[in-house]
Length: 187
Image (cartoon, rainbow, N blue to C red; front, side):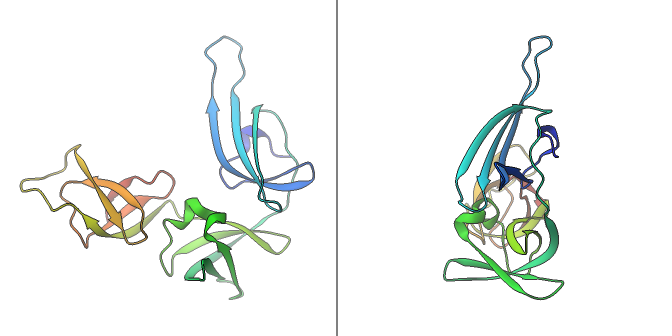
């Protein structure tokens, strides 16, 4: 049985015999002596799509759910559905954009991802730590701009906006951290 301190984003557990996936996770450590670390978890019921917020100590256990992680590839968007292909058996599956909203902003065709399955049904995807995306809109380059702490907003090919250094141009490919949405460097 997984405990709260072992969970991470996209972990799947059973709560009241229903599979739930971890959407958000935050940890707070009280400053008082002997106080236990508090884990605040936001789960989404995979069947009903209902949210459930839980605050607990790190040693609280949740039920087991057997999940399988397989390699997959993002193909295209069709009528609002994001379509993926299992790279092992070449079968296709999809998600509506709101089902994987946080990950959808970083999907480009042919991107390799990990798909999480339970009982043959795709539950969610896990993105690579970073992706290379092309800048499609940003302010012009400032003369003399170099690597500094100053930044400007840039719109990327998927529609997501990130802050980039002043020397980045339209058409440049940049690496973006998929967990935080931060600029990492040129690709």
